[in-house]
Image (cartoon, rainbow, N blue to C red; front, side):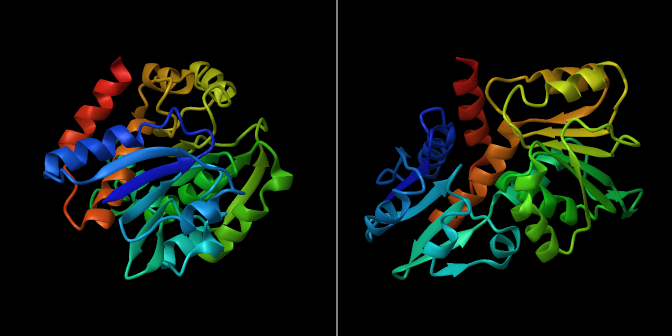
Length: 277
C-alpha cells in the first residue's frame, strides 16, 4: 500500500520519517510513504492518480482548504474547521479528516493542559497567533479545552474571513486583533500557528514579563527551539512544541490509514532522532 504527504514546499517535511517508523514497528513491510510536491493547481490530478493501491494522504499548506471540494465524504470536525489534513481512500471514495485538532489537544495535554482544574471544567482563556488553516484547527482545540474566551492575533486581519467563518461553525466567540496590538491580561494558553521568527515580538514580550501565559503551544518543529519557546521556558511556562503536534496528528493518520493503533513511542524516537542530526 502507498501513502504520501502533499504540500508546497514539502522537502522539509518530517512526516515520512514518522509514518515509515510506524510501518516498521507495525510490521507493514509492503507499505511505503513519500513526500510529493503539490500545490493547489496540481491537487486534483494527484488525487485522480491515486488508485486502489493508495491508502491515504497527509496534507499540509496550502492544501487543507483546497481539498474539501474534492472529497466524497468529510467528517463533521473537518467540515466545522474548514480544513482537512488527511485523506483516506476506502471503498473507492475519498474521506476527509482533521487530525490537527486532536493532535493539538494531545500536545497541550503533555504540557499539562487537560481542560479541567481540580476535577472541574477549566474555562481557559486562549490567545492564538495567526489566522490560517492551522489557526482554525487551534480554534477547535480551544473549544475542546472548554475555552471561555479566544482572542486571535492575525497578521492580516483583512484575510481572516475563513477563520471567522470557522469560529461561527464551531460556536466559538472570537475577538480579532492585529498581530502587534497590545493584549490585555495574559491568556492561560498561547497557541502560535505562525512560521518560525514571525512570533519573535511575543518572545520579547514574554522575556520582559509583559505577557506571561501559563502554557504555550508553538506549532513549529524546525528550527527548534524557537525564540518564543526559549523565552517561555525561561519564564517558567510549560511548552509544547511542533514535534508533539506533528507526532500526535500523524499517529491518528496512521490509525486511520492502517486500521491499527499507532506505535507512538517508535514514531517519537524516529522524529527526535531525525531532528537531532
